[in-house]
Amino acid sequence: MIIYHPANDVNHCSYRILNILHSVNNNKINCDMIKIISFYYVYPHLLKRMKSFPRPLNYQAKKIKNISDSFELTPNPRSLFFEMNHTHEAAILSLHQRSLININQNIVSLEKQNLPNKLIQEFKADKLTKSALFKILVECLPNVKLDGDNGLKAKSGLMEYKYD
Image (cartoon, rainbow, N blue to C red; front, side):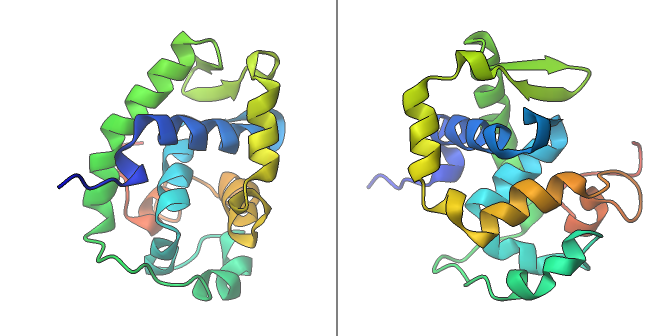
């Protein structure tokens, strides 16, 4: 039996990354941040497992608490995130090789002029792109401090932050 999950699909991950970059301010974001946003794009219910919400995410706490739980049993978020790292790295490398993104000093930026118009139309038609959850992911999360004891890495528990 073949079991499909978008978390392990490089093509879906490429779509997520491009959709996120297309939607964030200035079309660029820290590489670690895009991986975290992509993770919560696939597993939005795991936002509720954060120890506490960092600013400005704490203003969205009510909306986050209302995210419906998944029908699947999800193990430890940190191990899921670690497993997705290979998919993220492959997607980022593939997008970079196709000149759809640029990576400079750990900042991933969208090469908007190389993005096909049909793909932009898909982003606009995507139901998730119009949701409150997506707005939290692309408008609030990028404004959260990433490093340090009160940063997103620490609060989410997804990444090591002590050596940043």
